Image (tube, rainbow, N blue to C red; front, top):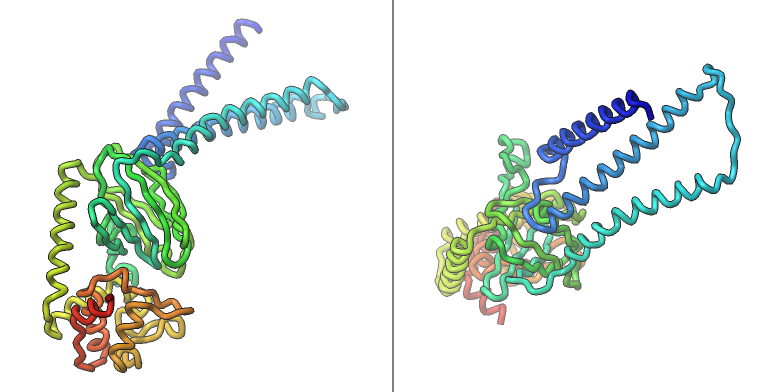
Length: 377
């Protein structure tokens, strides 16, 4: 190679490396790239993603560069004649060995990352995650905490009657809360259909399947709020099933646990109280908007025939015991879910009372939490 050729090669290599560095910097900040990793596994996935991307870019440049160079250099207009060759052993060995080396080079870090993703052993804490249509339930077995997490985006934004917020369809009423720097093992299952718990910043995407327990883990490296969604097409409101994880310091997490336990104790005390019709209707309206309005609609008119109306219906205006039974236990072979295990005694009593005295229904019936409590025994 002449000195001029070596100089040209050096300049091309320098330009390629400069462009690669600039492209890598752009990719790290681009909204079209993966989100900034917030756990060790997510960082390994991110690095693996970039490695494979640049391998593909390199192959693209080499293959298409050689092809276009050959087309131009050996074009017919320049007087070249087509060469005919078959069974070139050296060429066949080269194009077999090089792809093999590339695949092995990518398989080694990929296998290491997958094995790390599956290693949920020796966790600092465990949270059971259950998917419902369309909400998540989080249960902390050691702390004795259990709550539902549902979409908090106002219905007015969904129906285009109000401006959409910054985190449209990515906000919930009760986020999962974990301490920073702790290995969290998730036990995932579902109550009805297949869901999928996906938080990209933590490198987790695990299916939640009815009748099965699947596990996954993450260790958040920084405090903050991280968002995800259900990544499985689970029904008509699949897009309304976001995930929010709030990572706190250990001290803040301990305070949150204490507050949750205090709220649970207060709920038990409230279940023994006798409420007025107005108190139950006010509380029931909130429960209805959170858990029932998606199917039966905010005005109670439903979406017949799949989601029947409650306004003027036989269920909401007829026998009270039958109404309580269908809300608590659901209805087989329909989309009506059983809310007996999802809602507290007060919430069930409130929402049933509300349904019997809203949307033009005026039964005057009151369902007390004590009635619900008695039915659980």
